[in-house]
Length: 173
Image (cartoon, rainbow, N blue to C red):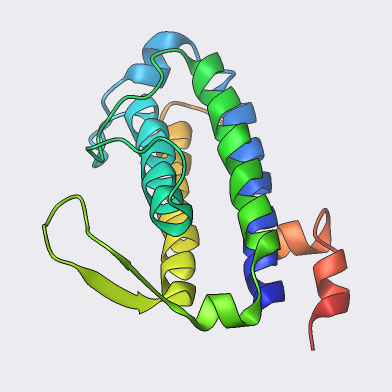
């Protein structure tokens, strides 16, 4: 499983780079236009993804800033958001790179920000959720980008594996 999560961390950073490259070509009005997605705009959705990742990383590591709300706007400017996204992707990849199979299988405990409940379960499903959550909202961003007349970009995992992630093909059993 360790190689699986390392692949997802690398894929996550790659897909975010591809998405941010295209979103960065939009004018500010389109970037902020409410297109009816759950977090409204590309601006809202990209901020949500960073906020959610920081919340999960705080849960995983006990370190770092974590907003108190899933709709927190962490960065009003795109350049600041992009730099923070790159830093968070590097932080996530370093964290996943430090894990062992035992740690992925071990339980951890946290409280959701939407409920005072205490949750305990293995780390692995929470990591899978983090990466799946990114994919889900990147799909929304892709739809918003094409609605705004942007290109239909390729964000498929297999495209990453066939190009930048080819090393993961060699580790697959």
